[in-house]
Image (cartoon, rainbow over all chains, first blue to last red; front, side):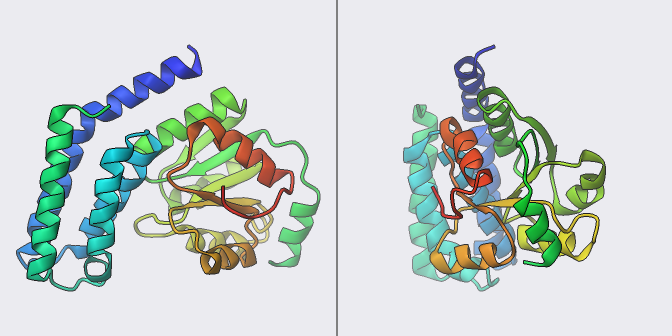
Length: 106
Length: 142
């Protein structure tokens, strides 16, 4: 199997897993924004999704995830609570990610 | 960098076998594909720092490609542990990280790393970049 064929197969498999990956981020987001801790875990999931989306070439999605990572990094990594304006911005970014994935990223 | 690491780095031969230490399965898959198919390397994968420390003696890689941010034991902690053991102190290491500010880069180079691969990496050029670092092309990011 050529690199290109294997690469496309991996990209497609990754794309198919994206809804589940986003659900995991959203669940971690709900935990953190409800004041139940879990900031570092949320940050780790977002950071991981950021890196993998970029490596697999889904740059538009990666851009949104990178925005979310930058938004939460100062507080989530230090296990600080989410402020209201941060929560609003984060919800908007998550909604845009959901839309992009539902529309079918390429 | 300690003396044994200097010696080991100074006498590098051909790069054939790579130990990839990365916790993210999606990154493991594409890095392995790129390094094996495009680079022609043999690649062994460990999903955590402790696993890498346990297996490195039997794998005996020419180079360790090491993610910086991993849960539990991060990349720099793995290097510190490697360097503390005489039998593993000299393994060449290249870090992979999304954070490649000059200050961070210098810190990794001072630890004895050959260099840093910036994440997200381009699978098409990962092998070339690793070979460049192996051949002494400098420690900077892509």
